[in-house]
Image (tube, rainbow, N blue to C red; front, side, top):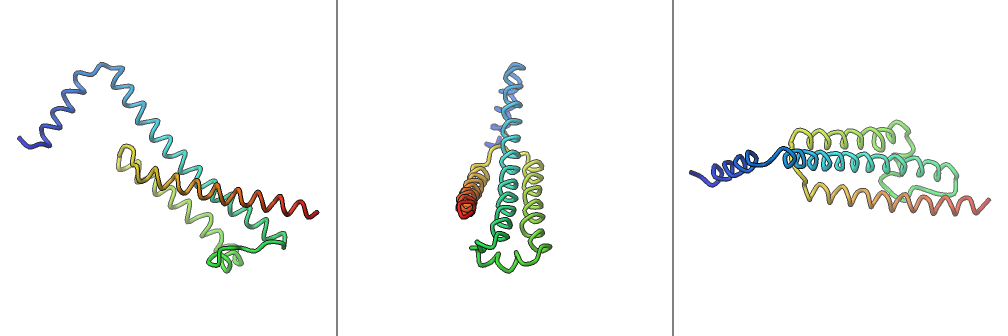
Length: 140
């Protein structure tokens, strides 16, 4: 008997001895983790779109320029901007959601950490946009 077989027997034994409410609690907890992961993916994409809209509005005012040298030439072409700031991130977010769904994995600390870093980063960028909007409106 291998270690893996012994572990499987333990899991099966524990599930058979668990009552129905314990099993429901486990299922509900996994469902909550999944919803949380998907909500975070949605929030990350939403913050990305808000960043794009705010950037376009601030640049359109004529008082601000794009600070990211890689994005400066991209923002001159609407279709390229739509692809890079709208469609590509959406495809990546949907791909992450699909992989998460297909893999049927539990919590991944690495994925959670990367999502949190992305959300915090975009939140800081959007706070910077708010500060710049305040500066812009104070000029009038």
